[in-house]
Length: 267
Image (tube, rainbow, N blue to C red; front, side):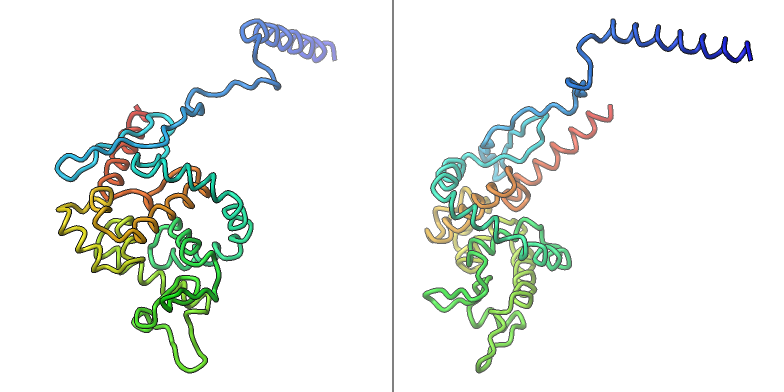
């Protein structure tokens, strides 16, 4: 019994001494002010990226620590203005979007479409399955009759599957995949979704570039605005950009930057 009490007392004394040493060495540490590891500190990324073209490839400045995809300088001003002007509308879309976005994401997963393309449904129809445009496009994804039937939607008599949320979302995924196979660039896909592939090919030919920011002035104003509204809505929901808001060159540069940062962290 005596030996056990002695062990206990010795252990307790050692523990008290250890706590005194720790308190002396780290006086500021405590539950109220936990120590944050250096790698958790985030350096705010700039709102826009410098994308000066060199032989058709953008040189992209990325925040070295935050690793956020920031906005291209050509659209940053538009986004800031849009977010302020349309705040009430955007808040409404945010409260409404939950029940739609889950289904859209599941469908997009099946077709290899980035989840962020779901914001296109807000641009197209404000998430209204019964939306109808002045030129006859119908449904949440705003398909014209011919495009819809090409994508397998049934339109006959009183039946119009453009108005069916799930089936039209499958059609949208198919169409987005088809356009990406044509252009391999999500900004060009967005422009083509609005104005048709032909207008994008024409803009590429006239500009001599496949970079959206270089060829946008050769696109119809509606298509330019369509892409910029998408980027604005995306930025509202995400707080940053993604592959869906980058040109192909920007996405490539970003991936290279990300890989370099990962290697640096490991080292």
